[in-house]
Length: 513
Image 1 (tube, rainbow, N blue to C red):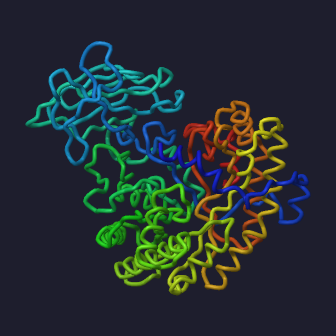
Image 2 (tube, rainbow, N blue to C red):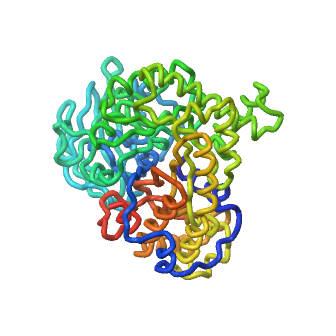
Image 3 (cartoon, rainbow, N blue to C red):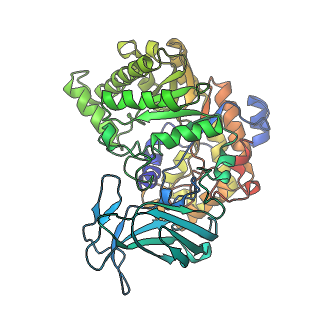
């Protein structure tokens, strides 16, 4: 939900300079200016999308890690989707007890159009009770604590229900292993790991649910004991560290905007204890604190004004972000006994280099950081113009190309600010931004055109051209958004649309191979 809302609104606030992009020269002529478009990007990273039951990235071999929060339903009859009754759950979102005639339902692999593994799943659980299965799943056999479930993805998603549980020993620790993975020796699905292979940095911002108004208390975090990994606090730190260790990629962690010092210190301590010592850690305070559509921006503005950091609300907001970032960096440095393994990141609005200077110069924050991060998207203006629906796919790609070509001045301005404070310029997000805005989201023609543009072979070369322009203009590490997401009226941000997609049909992903 939050990723979708984020995609809906991003186009309003992230269009290139707020100006229309002229039609471009063809790609070959553009390549002569910035180098060979065939050169694949290096020093690349990738964002992961929000962990949900409808995400096309089935990252875990245990499908229940992707399960949606419990829905109350009746045990019999043509049950309604959600009765609205209260469910008795513990602090880990496990069902403690059920009312008479009440069931608790969890959804998995929802709305994926059949793009997830089929076959015989093994469901295991602790405690005493009874489960039933609906949707694409049907029970083949059952024994205490174990069930064999046949899943046919073409029939939709899986509904797993607890229909009876013993309050003295309730059903808990549910696992729903994909075919061939019951041993539990693997955590992540091989297809997911294979998609991550080209990237040396993984940004976990959406896995951490940074755009929610979280409590920021360590006691409220997701753990390995949580019923699933889709709760309001996102994926557990243990799993994120495990993924970094498994892939050999450097993790990029964000600290929630309300995180107190205890949360930050314990997060850093667990990272130091569990992360492969060969790995560096990118540390960032929240996400896009400059962007007024997110709760973290409102929080920073209120705190900045309360502390009297400026009489101007936006400047106070940026200065608070800068100040709190440095406080967080200090805690990480104390835990890691220095900054050698840390990349301390300050992020700003790409199209407004003033925000970069405001953040870097406040109390010499730039001298206490290692990198300035921006999000140099291209094509963002197309989603706000109704005239886009009358264009051809090639015309849309021409505008994207022109947008890339004209991005050099903005990138260079940010690079100049980074050089002034002796920090690297990197990107925290980037790539195409063909997302309909406002009423245009109901324009099916525009949605279709954006899908076709994202799947067009030219998009591979545009991504490589974008990388060349980025580096030519002073950029370093390039982290794109995002690995896997469905395409629709809210955007087409995934490098791949489905995890089981033939990579030959994913031109954006092929640009990174």
